[in-house]
Length: 197
Length: 48
Image 1: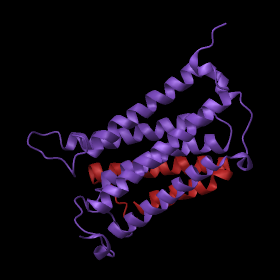
Image 2: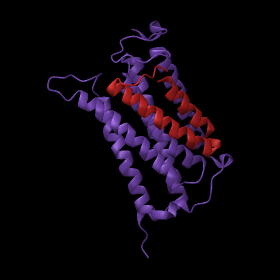
Image 3: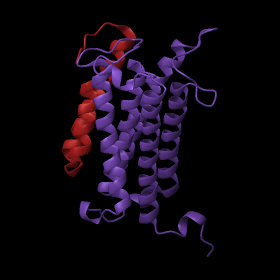
Image 4: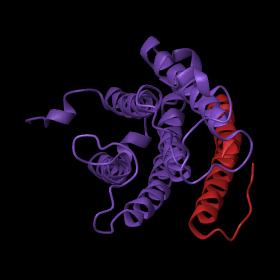
């Protein structure tokens, strides 16, 4: 019997690779947003911050899948976080959809970051749904993981995910403090001199 | 807004206890939605 390409690897390995890669991509996207913020001195607006939170929240489902057994509810958690992110990014796209509106922030590859977020969050929902559809219930029959069985790559990805949350939290605190963020921020409340060029 | 990140951090740290992580996740979704509604409608007051 001819095996399909995805059947040549053990299913547990494929599921593990999928979840680790997904969390890694979320880390990379969050890292990119922080780099843009620091080097371009482009302060995120409240909706941008909420999109960051939404994107990091998508990673929670993958994180739980890596640490524990792959479960349907973890994928649902990722999809719900992605749906909220779509709502927020969609709102921002609609705010700037008027003619001659230059949008918020610098575009990347011709599109603003919130438009990218809208597309990526949609892609997350499609990818998760497709993954569950293709592998059906088989991915939920794998044996449970334990924290001690995590590989070095898993540990690095998880630690960098937590570090990115901490970094985002610090930057958010420096920008807004404990008060509500302003709609169009132009400087940090605290330590503005650190990042200004 | 900072509270959202605090919740995210709490979830990622508490992933050793999946039950707690899930409760905090739903709390995060609830609070993030409230924050979004506040910024979209200016009818709610969430300063922290």
